[in-house]
Amino acid sequence: MHILVINCGSSSIKADIRDHFSGRYVAEMEIERIGQPDSLLTLNGESETLEGPLSHGDALGVALPRLLDGLSPDTPIRGVGHRVVHGGEKFSHPVRITDEVEAALDEISSLAPLHNPANLAGIRGARSVLPDVPHVAVFDTAFHATLPRRARSYALPHDITDKAGIRRYGFHGISHAYVAQKAADFLDSDLRDLRLITCHLGNGASLCAVEYGRSIETSMGMTPLEGLVMGTRAGDIDAGVLLHLQRHHGYDTEALDDLLNRKSGLAGLSGRTNDMRDILEQAAEGDEDCRMAIQVFAHRVRKYIGAYAAVMGGADAVVFTAGIGENSAILRHRIAQRLDFMGARLHEDRNREARVNRDNPVERVSTANSRCHLLAIQTDESRAIAEAASKLIMESDRLQDSRSIPVAISARHLHVQQETVEKLFGEGYQLTPRNDLSQPGQWAAEETVKVIGPRNSFPSVRILGPPRNLDQVEISRTDEFFLGIDAPVRASGDIENTPGIILEGPAGRVELKNGVICALRHIHMTPDDADYFGVQDRDIVEVAITGGERDLVFGDVLIRVSPSFALEMHIDTDEGNAANLGRGAEGTLVCTAGRATLTRRRTTYDTVTEAAE
Image (tube, rainbow, N blue to C red; front, side, top):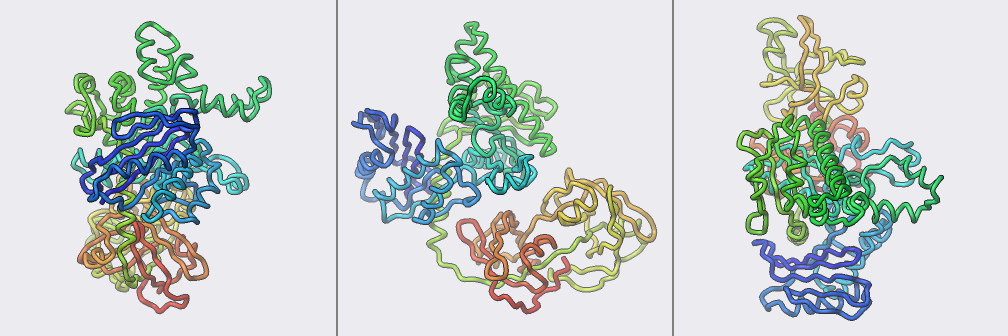
């Protein structure tokens, strides 16, 4: 399968054709100086001037047929993947481009005025040249759609943020996701078992905290201006500075935009250039402004690394990528200083000698005894876009049937060890089964205990049996605030770095040091079900419930596969109330492009499961 990947910037177009299965480049093209009198076309290493000025659409109309004409007859283009910087609230996953999608992208262009209009122009130009193949939009913001509300929210009044659509989106998501997976592969680990800090350091720069395969924090916000010092962008700045410049120094909106986006960052600090290579040379020759630019850049990156380590309770690896991260041993050295508290220790010789490229995309630059690995990884956004586009195309080509899935609503409950049972109810005590649950071998016990939090308590929380090898309390978000604790959203059994709580039974109290979670919504299924739906154990899918009184999309639904499971989706009481679901809800799951769609089959349900778990 050959995929054409197009990345339209504000003044340039990059395009290449990839063999999806091998990742091999078949052809490459770049057009620079779009909009200027003479654009420069480089096609498979050969350069020439195009008479202009040309728009993005005009440039593609001229150059794209030439790229395609150079292909052999056995290299048909199966689809086109387009990088789109901002997906807004509407797009949190790759989508096949239609006229309706084009119109929706046009509506959100104001969120990224330097990028999205160019992306959209490239889409329209490519669709006119290749109207008969599927085109797929892959979004820089999509990987960060998993940001929890606490990470994506600004501390502004809701009536303002809701009306204006103000929230943190994050960018460079294609790169962050790609290098996170590369790091997991290199470490011979499942990405969903790792805590990673990925550092995309180039002319545009951002950090991302990747916890168990999901973006949970990132340094860029609603726009690419927030966060790190960048080539020409200021990054984090006190908003009061902007008000001061506006009130007392005559800056209007346009002047502030120009200052923050084009005249700040490394260019502003150095007073010379935004190119880190030139800044390093000038600093070595004694230029104090360039030295300050390097120090501020490295300090800001190190500060964010420390913050994200705190957010995740540690890190298994720090990844350096993009132009500076991949190629500057000096900046990696400066940034990695004083990260010993994380167990991250730089190996100076490895760092100096590290060279990452297509043939050698990953280098370890940490010492052998580092608890936290330091890695330099070559990013490849083009390949990531090609993979996302080909996956969507292949899965949309596959006609799938539907299969009924019961939906269980889980009230707050406990799983406890036998040792804990005896501390709560007396030595030798055995739990008494009350009723069977839908999952084979599981049951609700007659016994309940009091759950005591820092603020409030619940008098009768039911224990589920049989006893397990750990103590775990599963609550909803509403319960979390009532009890006064901060419980993370986790898969069952993942209780590291979770808060504790007090359990009180008739024979005594037990103070749990950890174990309180808000359970990640999930679907239990057998291996046969997994084959049917085209998913694997621990995949994360999205679920849309439609056709009833209220349509709702559930993101981050965990797939759990075991021969001992019965097919069923589990959500908590808050989510069930939000979706207006009661006991006996039933639906069908249809997998499309890595997402799962759960469609309500009818508005009046038959009872299909005891929804106690």
